[in-house]
Amino acid sequence: MTFASLTTPLVGLVDATVVGRFGDAALFGGLAAGAVVFDVIFATFNFLRSIPTGLVAQAFGRGDALEERAVFLRAFVIAAISGLALVLLAPLIAAISEWFMNAEPALTAAMDLYIRIRLISAPAALINYAALGYFLGRGESGVALFLQLLLNGVNIALSTFLGVYLGWGIAGVGWGTTCAEVATMIAGMVILLGRFRAMPKISLQHTFNVAAMRWMLHLSGDIMFRSFVLTGAYFLFMRQSAQLSTLTFAANAVLIHFLLFAEYFLGGFATAAQQLGGRAIGAGDQPDFLRAARLTTGWGFALAGFASVLFFAFGEQLVGAITRAADVRAEAIFYLPWAVFTAPTGVLAFQMSGVFLGATWSRDIRNMMLLSFVAFIIALFAFGQMFGNQGLWAAYHIFLIVRGISLLSVMRRRVRTAFAE
Image 1 (cartoon, rainbow, N blue to C red):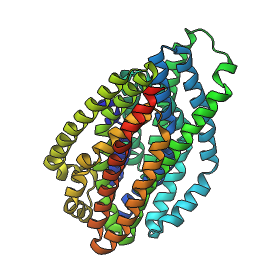
Image 2: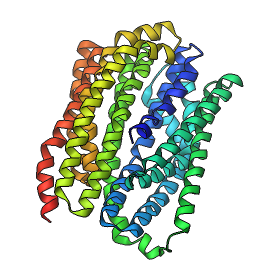
Image 3: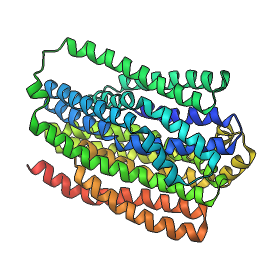
């Protein structure tokens, strides 16, 4: 699961590296701004991965294979409809994003082009979320890893070919990533159709049971809110960076990859906590649930320390690999220590989120995220005015710490309630 999770941010890193070869801060900033907008939109729909993972894991714990399949089909329908809606709303999304970001004209033009192209892949990307949730819920991390490697392999090949070799620039990068999402969706559907064909038929009445659909939508609403707030914090961080200067924005766009790598580096243990915890909830096994939470969190802290050592050792080389612009590279290296420490400060937030997602305790996730966001907003504007970019990074660290501690503080009560039923 760690290897599968690690491949996820490579999509954005590959795009950034290809555009970074042109040495243009405005072009690189436009890609970063477009990627932020894209991440805000798609991360809002991250429930299409996390909710199926938890529900499938719980059905797996109960030994209910029919319900596992039904969960995926419900998520598939929601993903397809949502993806088509995003395609139709692409011009409006681009216009609102440009207004909100309020950046320089050259950066805005590059951002607009990237957003419009990438949103074409929305149906495929969201269906990939649903398929990934099904496989992870069953603990089939090998299949998940295969699909993620396919996505990144096609993305690397096509983005490099179209963006650099054919000279399409940022448009080529956008089309390369879009084609990669579609190819991955086709591969995932081939695997699932082959598997489902060998299973007993499932009725539409069972698949779209009103109570089950209502429960999934309730969970999805809470997690959508959580994802929206999470990516909103990320979006505000980048917006405040743009208000300081284009150079600061571009430098933070480079450094944000360290934060994303830290999150996805730890994502394997968070996903393991989600799958194992959900399975224990389904089986009604409290000792297994607590063991999964302890082990994944402990190993998460160990891995976070290892990640920070790696970032310290090779951080400057990675910054140089992402961008050739000397001014951006120098600025990013100056603020590198802030990005390096996001792994240890964020590990508890990531792990607790995995535990709560597996147990489908969505209300607590929503409420604690809102509390953390309020703390982040206060710190962002207070420290940003006093300390500039240093203050922005300090505020983000506070956001990560509050997320983890707040969830941990309510876990004991939730465990008592869940296993007393």
